[in-house]
Image 1 (cartoon, helix red, strand yellow):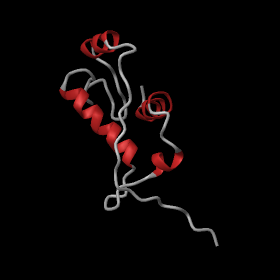
Image 2 (cartoon, one colour):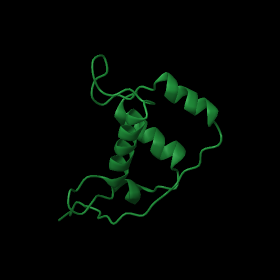
Image 3 (cartoon, one colour):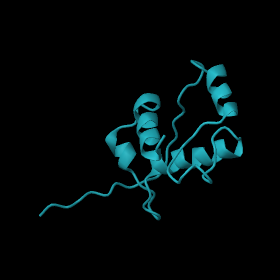
Length: 98
């Protein structure tokens, strides 16, 4: 799946308590979106656990592909997983209309 699709699916299906402000909040220094950064960091952890393939030959940047090990984890934990939320200091960047 494309990263954009994965992020949207995670936000809407698994973390339904996130509102639009949550999804637009950014880290104060880097200005990167917090929700997207957390999910992308999660992908790195899944790669380290060999549950998602790393970017490389045959798998372009911006693509997520589950491994057999990851698929087995999904099947074993079906219906057992619950979303965990955390608080982060963030800012909202709003366009000023004149």
